[in-house]
Image (spheres, rainbow, N blue to C red):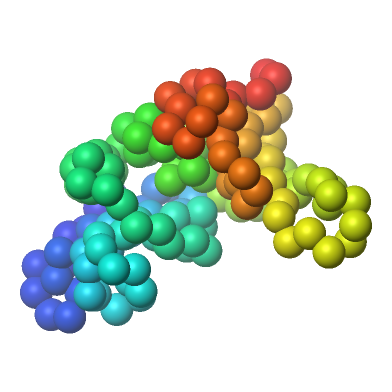
Length: 155
Ligand SMILES: [Zn+2]
Ligand SMILES: [Zn+2]
């Protein structure tokens, strides 16, 4: 289900709500936020993702990919554009799950000094597939632009 805002201060916003395959509730809503709309504090077009908790600016190629994926409500395409933009999506199930149905865990403090604010977030879906959902430290495995399947862990 996706909704495109055609006028008003949020004109150009695309909001795609993905349903949880386990309970039917909303898994998450991912938004494309054009530059200047409320909620976008970046200096360009942005995507709001990870259960609404993160917003990041997009390059021109990513703008096209994210807009197309959200317009089509296509979580797989969004995940392929970058896994972090489809945090609720399990590529092995080809389905989205809400936060109640993901078992979400954060890495213990990687520096071990009690001060590090960087935590990677992993999730395990109801079928036991574990994936990296969010990364707060240095780059994703295989670089920042890896293809979706590469960060699937275990099974
Ligand atoms: Zn659910
Ligand atoms: Zn799964």
